[in-house]
Length: 212
Ligand SMILES: Cc1cc2nc3c(=O)[nH]c(=O)nc-3n(C[C@H](O)[C@H](O)[C@H](O)COP(=O)(O)O)c2cc1C
Image (cartoon, rainbow, N blue to C red):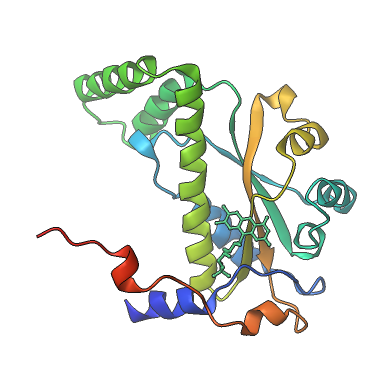
């Protein structure tokens, strides 16, 4: 318990990364695995995690992200995306994956799960459906931020970008994807003064409400 709280106190949204320091293969693999293992509503996993390695592309993205240097200086830059038009194929893919991971799964159970999920999706307007899949992206973000902190890897969650421009630069339209939120991963620069700022959070009594 204390380990994770200490890690959360240690972490901060890194503003300036040391461009020379890279995550090891093991470290980036662990971060990608944390994303993959993130929970989602019904387990639907409506995401693709796009790791942008090309430095020239990252320069273009930086220009579309108010020139935030994390985009180019971090060791790794990941765009969390969801389908631009979420539909029932998400459910079909999820059911197929459940069957693959557990071949002896009860087909009746799977069928009931399918009915519930498809019924849930049908009840939603297309805007609500979009909002629902986008919400899932933030769960993955939270998981990777926590995992990074636990591994003493610095990170910056990033919403400060022009998503239409990102989608264009990364050619997401052709893949049926749209960007939601990003995460830069790497190691803080010694010059990042934000690292030494005290953490500012509301007091426990301001945010925890107990109903007895
Ligand atoms: C969804 C989300 C988007 C954010 N976008 C940016 C961003 O574009 N650039 C940035 O420097 N920080 C960004 N932040 C960092 C927040 O400003 C930061 O987490 C918050 O001020 C709390 O500080 P701490 O994370 O250092 O404790 C974002 C945080 C979240 C959760």
